[in-house]
Length: 210
Image (cartoon, rainbow, N blue to C red; front, side, top):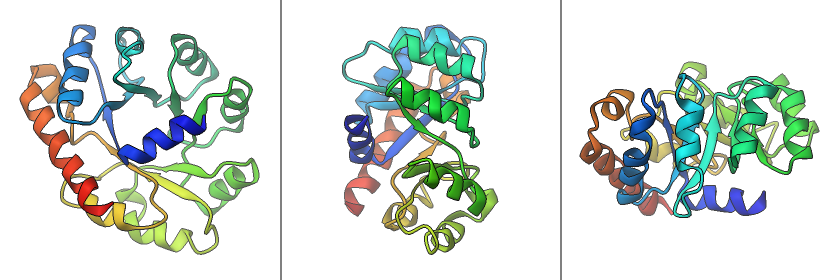
């Protein structure tokens, strides 16, 4: 689990992808790797999501996780396939305990002080802040870091190339996620050059901040 955390922190940006066609899975991850960003969160939002995950899960040059996990059944499916991390849009203590028993990193969603306090009291040190811009963005995260100075945030939702830098410069932000590096329409259209370019540009921002 700590190894996965370290790898995520090394990249500091995580492409969140929606795959409508399983045949796009491999060329998509090829484009991510070519853009120097070998990490992906495959969201469970389409009928082909798990099949796509199965296609790419064994890639040794990729750190592969699963997002939009809302049920224990989805968690178990991702875990059986070998996902390295699981991201939930909201806070669910049952999924969190489930993950602890299976020794897999779970990044639970939490945006309110109540949710963050619940997460902290269960030993969580990293939460997904989603949808970030809709819930106050960086100003809200800065305010929440006051009562929760040890909590680290993984904001997604509304983050893009233009506002990425200030997020990464904040000490409470562990990493950022988003779809701007691999937009759903780009994946559908096979616009692999656009995805590679967007990833490379995001990586340059990370390197300029670190």
